[in-house]
Figure 1: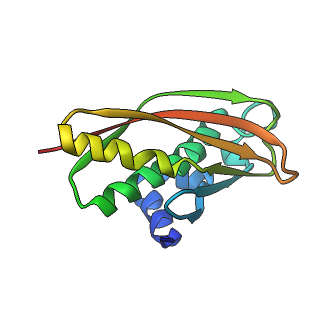
Figure 2 (figure 1 turned 90 degrees about the horizontal axis):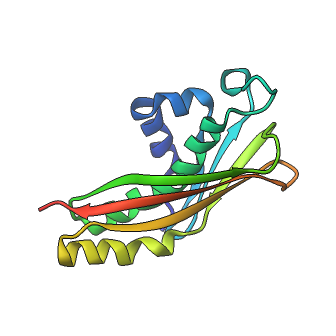
Amino acid sequence: MTVNTSKYNWFTFFKLPAAWWCGVRLRYVDDRRAVTTVKYRWVNQNPFRSMFWAVQGMAAEFSTGVLVTDKIRQSGKKISMLVASNKASFSKKATGKITFTCEDGNLIQDALDHTVATGEGQTFWMRSEGVNEEGVVVSTFDFEWTVKHKS
């Protein structure tokens, strides 16, 4: 099921204003994949004439988190979610438009089913890869998500 991306982008304006002002935007989301973009600008630069690593992290996290949020919404259950840890690697300066893609939506349902069945928190890792306009990978982020059923 494809979701209306403009609703999520309005959500960032009101609930994640730092991401919105830095230019993080959701471009596509379905049950398996989410794509976000962010463009190198003055407001999100570092002193080395490239995009600040934390801005890349916001775009990468958004591409994973929107998948988790959507699966929780579809379940109809009260489930909390939180990033427990993350890892990142940077392979090239991030300039121009960077596109982050997460294709790990298939990892979420088992964790949600298990937390609902047992009441125990569950963790799983999701990856988001950022590529520049030439298709070159500039950064890779891995996020460890935790989910827990709220009684």
